[in-house]
Length: 154
Ligand code: 5GP
Image (cartoon, rainbow, N blue to C red; front, side):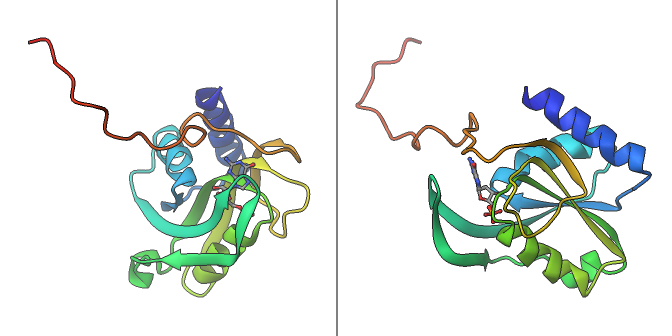
């Protein structure tokens, strides 16, 4: 599913004629999307922005927070940027990133796998729309912990 979703999302970007100079991924969920879009659009210049907002299913901080390191404005300067994330839910995360970019870049557009109806930022590229909570395979299970000592076969 994810392979097809990211491929179709990339096709929508290509069909629109937008040729990003760089892809700005919103970690962590956007990393998967950004990597796939990077291959599909033949963009090797990938940047990461760390934004913390959700602490659980529909559990949020008061507002999204940018965590260091913040992307270097010089790297973004004058670029056509494609912001990649997994979901636009309230849209607050994308608004923060879009506003951060707006002062520096030539053009900024957003691509997401899912967009929810209440989002305050309308993404230019959306694979599917839903108002439900989405479970991704990489973020559904709790983090792994070290297991009891095991005897490993040679
Ligand atoms: P927003 O700022 O648009 O409310 O939320 C953006 C971030 O919250 C997304 O990048 C994603 O990490 C997380 N998020 C929001 N809604 C969902 C959801 O339905 N499922 C999952 N797995 N994450 C979500």
